[in-house]
Image 1 (tube, helix red, strand yellow):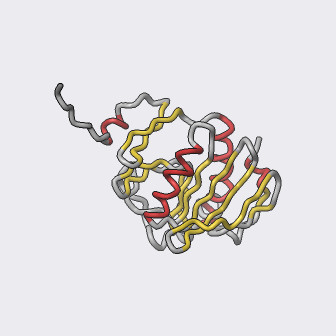
Image 2 (cartoon, rainbow, N blue to C red):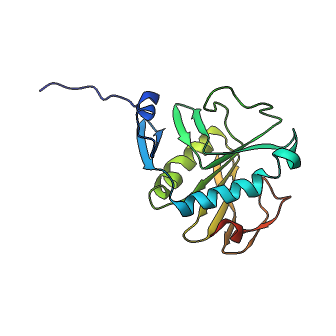
Length: 185
């Protein structure tokens, strides 16, 4: 019996996926999920507006942060798509010309769904920590919860666990406060 070599996934495998799927290469495996469901998309968009409006357009100017929806991260041999990510403009003064990012973000946010929660928590969070992402938020639109984490000595330290309509004032955007209920339908 012939031994066939295991083919590692490549970016071409992601590009070959139908448009209704999101592909990532995580720990040498191609992970494929459907595009986000409406509640997931609403939560992600609402948070992007809530935080992004602080730094983009007439409110943000050239200082502060880049806050982006679903950026494709090509970092450390992985291809990751976080729901939201942010880079301090002092570290990344301009956006890259490529369709992806090779610079580690300062903040990531994953919006959990039944299809992604396990991978987001058990695989992507450790990768983000290993890469040196300093802040990570996990939002569950079904449970109406937000968990905020800060990287400390290579491990995630839970800073806050919020629910329903709690007031959010969390690092790295602690100067801005908003009701968590703004993220639900």
